[in-house]
Image 1 (cartoon, rainbow, N blue to C red):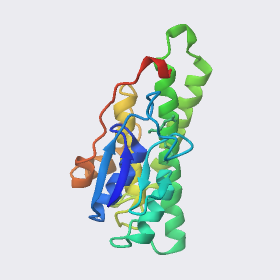
Image 2 (image 1 turned 90 degrees about the vertical axis):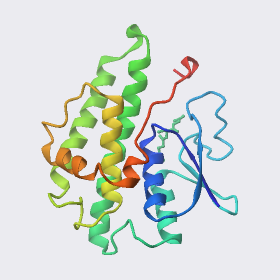
Image 3 (image 1 turned 90 degrees about the horizontal axis):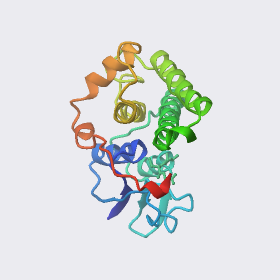
Length: 211
Ligand SMILES: N[C@@H](CCC(=O)N[C@@H](CS)C(=O)NCC(=O)O)C(=O)O
């Protein structure tokens, strides 16, 4: 059986979990905390990050985008990538923006955990700019239809919902709903989907020694 190394707040692991659920693929979910000093992820991923998918042959696959490509190749139905190349590129571009917002949110989160005098204002502002520019780009690129691309559920929807729920978890003071109304309506429309309900992000304790 497939095994997924995951963490409860991770938007990247969440994308993979949603894809596995949507395709109805049985898998063992192994929840760890990748930020703990003794998390010991390097034996699965040299970069020390989750998500990592461990196949039935004990192959390790990492980086959420690559894991999802691997799953799509091996379990094509129902597809999460559009088949038409142009539409697929559009969906993947949306995934890149959504993931980039999450990367900036992680950097911001750890910056905010440092003692006040150690925090860098320019660094913080740099990450906030990536988040707001990324949201602006998503606001322009996602469709007004039920789903982001080609009115069909897929990777773009999974990525946008994962990013926005992660934003709500990690940056509670950021008022995005009134500013980005198209994204806001889209996320509200998606909130009843079972795979999203089952994978809502929750915080994990971070050891002080990590920061
Ligand atoms: N590009 C990677 C990002 C994965 C990532 O940043 N994972 C975080 C958790 S959300 C992690 O494991 N970080 C641990 C570390 O950087 O040491 C992906 O899409 O899978």
